[in-house]
Image (spheres, helix red, strand yellow):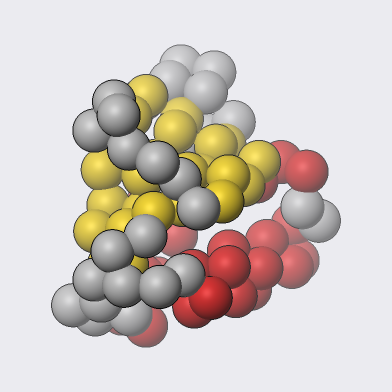
Length: 79
């Protein structure tokens, strides 16, 4: 996944917490099939992953590019 071209990159800590997941889903929904977004966060975004599993079942891929301890990066693809 090192050569993946990202349509958009999101720095989650820069988004106000109460709007964070909503904004990430809005960006994901704007992706075209086959495109990827890169999510960077200061903690493991596992709750977001669970939310994707419930709300966007079978429409996304999720691959950790970096797993802490101070930075987590995830490639989220749209199928």
